[in-house]
Amino acid sequence: MWKEQRPTALARRHTMSDTLRDDTEDAQEQWTNRLAWFLTGAVIGVTAAVLYAPKSGRDTRRFITDKTQQGREAVTDTSKDLVDAGKEMFERGRKLVEDAAELFERGRKLVKG
Image (tube, one colour):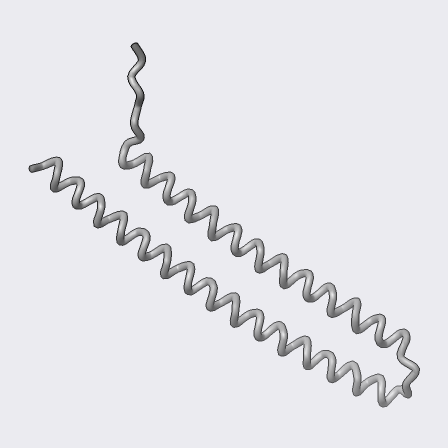
């Protein structure tokens, strides 16, 4: 009595697009969370180290400088990883779109005969 409806090519493309967008947003959110937790941990660590360090002012300043440099390097490395991951996701998305366009063309040619 009821016919089963199949999704149209447009609906399938829309679904693939939504999935890709969701994956990209999830990955961006994950990196943002990691960076935020890293920075929070760095601030807490430095604060605790300064408060509990039984060192002279000069030694404490040197310690803070060293830790700040380590934090800066870690942020730089994380940023590079983020950029690389973004480029990789972009390339995967571009490839997905090219594949979808190719499949669309094949389907169109099959329908035309």
